[in-house]
Length: 139
View 1 (cartoon, rainbow, N blue to C red):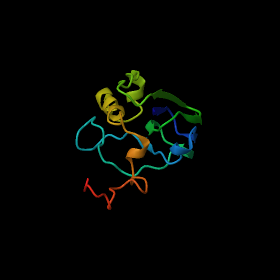
View 2: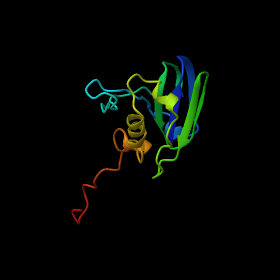
View 3: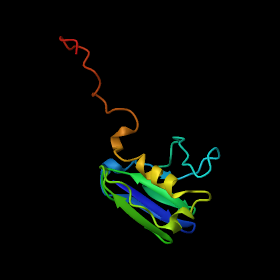
């Protein structure tokens, strides 16, 4: 699932995972790069774990998880879309105003880049899933 969080004013947010496999998903924040006005920042920084209590500034945030996330807080709205080929719904015009110099196209790109990302895509592959070294066929 892709869950968008639109924070209108600085607030405290508590996020819980519905599934244990989502315990370490990241809370990503939309940023506009200094190099191209209105373009989404493409840096892949390690973002904080989403599960927990956070002080969030006004802005646009994203969680990519396997299942639904429980999000509680004031001054925010959320929107969830399955991780499939569905495009992210167009946010209303007020959403772009949450981030200085953001464009609707950059916000759409921010949510589109994560389409198809699975929770297991990040980090190392699970132990024991590497190539079999004693395979007689050499495959």
